[in-house]
Image (tube, rainbow, N blue to C red; front, side, top):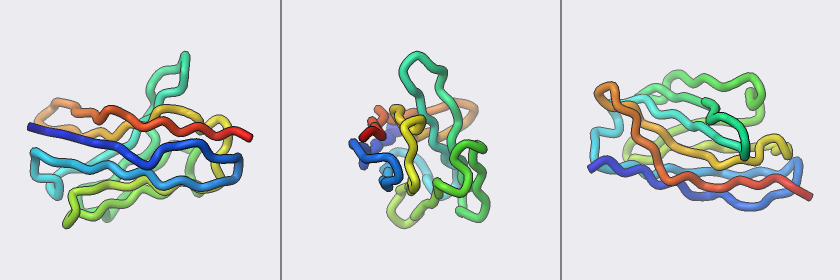
Length: 116
């Protein structure tokens, strides 16, 4: 079965950095694009970053562009989100997503809190 497990979240101060990981299993990871989403309390879930199957192309929502970097290691079936210069507005639960055969699969999420 498809499984996505996020890790790496935590509490950081503004301006700090955090690296999230998403370990995938149950499907041919290297054949699919992956994405990161986040959801803050009281807000809708938003797309943060996407990466193509080979990692050759990435896209970011404007609010994180130049601060976040999505990457993947297909040999490890893992996608990463490096987050730098974190702001309080980045506080949210971050989710890993895989779209397989028109179905979306999600991890359990990992909490990122940016606060002094």
